[in-house]
Length: 128
Image (tube, rainbow, N blue to C red; front, side, top):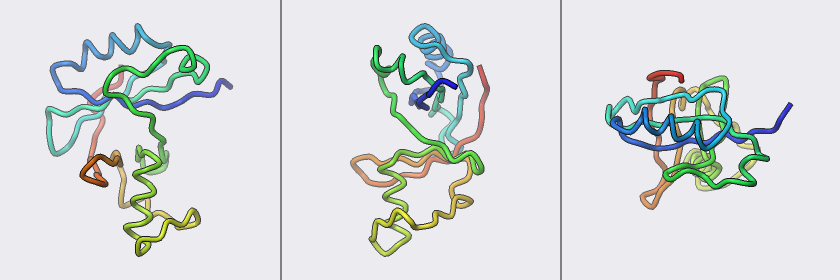
């Protein structure tokens, strides 16, 4: 089985369809999952798997990050965000053995930015 990397592209409602076309032109992808922010119906997140080999030859599209996924709770996260969660829940201590309560992050994207940790509640808008 080919090794893939899960990518997430952030966009606004009006760009969703053109961005799906751009993703399909830039990479070989089977599906693009379009998620909507439950708290802001203008914010969308397009997730898709790209071959690691293909990524060696191409750069990420703008507004795109690499993410990981907890399949049981459909939680997307960056490594920095999950480290922030651990430290928030574990009295500031980063411990790789800390058990994350994934149910608390069901159907969300966990990211960090200049303001710190952010949990974005999402739901599937469509699958292309």
